[in-house]
Amino acid sequence: MTPRIIASAALAALLIASNGLADDMLKSGPPVGARNNRGAFYPNLVTGPGAGERRCPV
Image 1 (cartoon, helix red, strand yellow):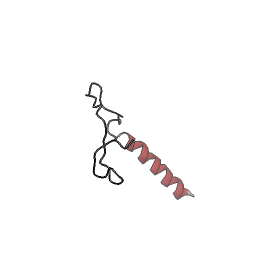
Image 2 (cartoon, one colour; image 1 turned 45 degrees about the horizontal axis):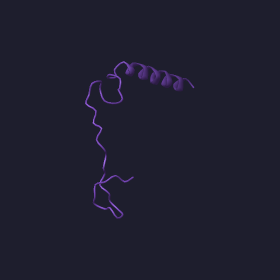
Image 3 (cartoon, one colour; image 1 turned 60 degrees about the vertical axis):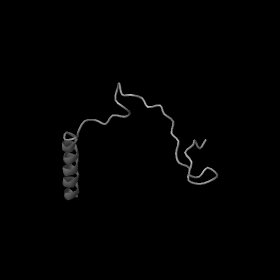
Image 4 (cartoon, helix red, strand yellow; image 1 turned 90 degrees about the vertical axis):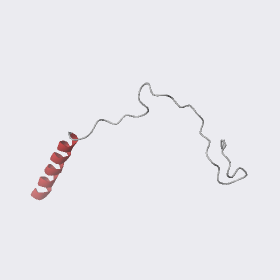
């Protein structure tokens, strides 16, 4: 039982210590002031009557 407690304590210490080494926090989305590209998304259709064309699938 003692080796399990020692391993758990070592793992906990490693996880706590590695948290301080992390880079900046992740940020979601574009940065403030960035240009907003509101262009449409037209994928190349692969199958069906529109195969090989770029158009909206909806």
